[in-house]
Length: 75
Image 1 (cartoon, rainbow, N blue to C red):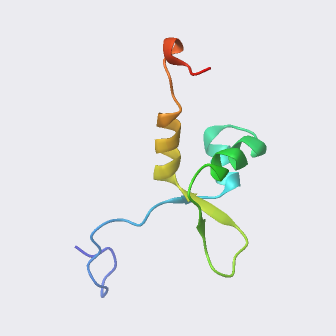
Image 2 (cartoon, rainbow, N blue to C red; image 1 turned 120 degrees about the horizontal axis):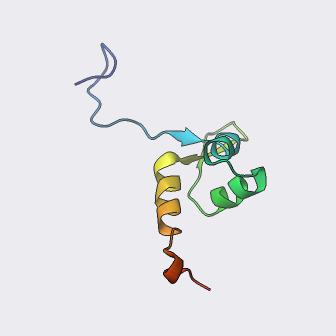
Image 3 (cartoon, helix red, strand yellow; image 1 turned 90 degrees about the vertical axis):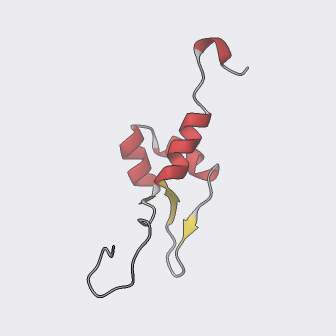
């Protein structure tokens, strides 16, 4: 099934991209925290633009991997 009429079939949706500001607003963290998270993830950089993005799915996976029960928090 095609998302756009007249185009080739699209098998899956494109990833949703977040910049530092969107990440900060969505997570409710400081700009510094959003930038620190972005430094730990693969980034998408579009040629000709200075801004970098991260995939929403990579952010979700990172948060999941950094979530611990109280008894399992690394020291």
